[in-house]
Length: 136
Image (spheres, rainbow, N blue to C red):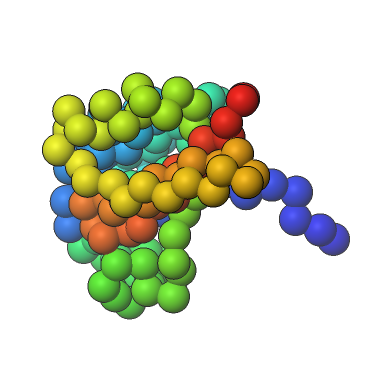
């Protein structure tokens, strides 16, 4: 038995709307269909994949506990997970969009391998890495 693909990350948030807005408006993911799961939340899509799921922390915890599913303990930032990484295109347009939304990003370039990177944080303190391959 082997894993086939990474499906999604669930972001538990005390600010679900701000979190949705960040991933949708600043990063360009698309808010899409989400079934009634017994707690409020959002699914953000990259193409046809709902890769970021967002749930309000308290209602998700109550729902999960009611059906016997354990819930993560709140931790600052990403806890033991350092960051999520995405690949993107059009570096200049991406940086301009972040600026329009007031989002600061640390820039790192590795010219030897044609890589430009941005490191930034979502409203919950989760660190994101955005990679841009030069020439692609």
